[in-house]
Image 1 (cartoon, rainbow, N blue to C red):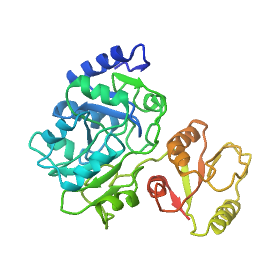
Image 2: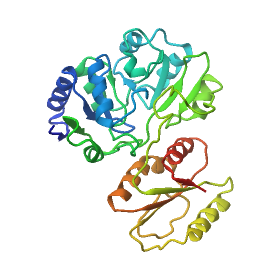
Image 3: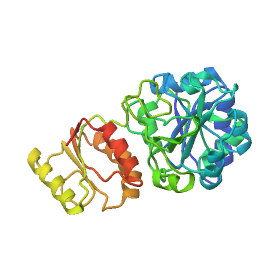
Length: 339
């Protein structure tokens, strides 16, 4: 299969979206940008089309998919009912990087939900994604547009590197603004559960709807995307240095562990992701105490290190608070070793 990559702009936007929506209507898959990461989309109501997502990604079929909508009317067709808490959050955060898990309607195929009676839904805050869904006239199921287990794509070329020859079209809409996948919040069992942290933080959600729980125990049946399987991993070995509560202690701990590992700063085979202080490695991404910058560029950095042939990546962790919880969630899943 030939994979076309088309850069979208104001001049060709309608034409590109027409080409992409026609493919969706014909039961094909299309990669497109959202504000979080690039998604690999298919008609959520077409089981055969959805199966092509799993095949292209090499994704386990018990791993649920997020359904993307462009209009609130579509939501009512996909769920049994909308909980009061969901209504409040939708008014505040949609369109945006918040996915809500609710009881599914009979219209939603079981291949979308991993056989569960719930479905994960969001409205993306991206004009290309919203335009595609609207033109296609159907809700679009879309996980991240990468090979399963690899870092999520934040550029169209990341998608091409993973899925070239496996999908017909990639819409190039530039770099994703958020850089990490959406927050996933479960509201199907009379309580709020944060299945996946993201840009919309646990603290923000609790100010609006009260207590938000974290999932506990080993995940045997994933309730939402990103819970059970290995994720976000580059080819290189990732060594994560956990942060300390005290900022100075945390900085010293990171520097001390880097020295202890005995790395050669000039080696092309070593990469460093630093947060509190730039160390001066040849292959280094420094995020200058900016959590948003860290999130936006984390997957880009991991993929860039692979591109450079780096074999070992030393990563400075941050505190599990606010958006930092999402960053650390991805890093712990990507890490081969945690110190």
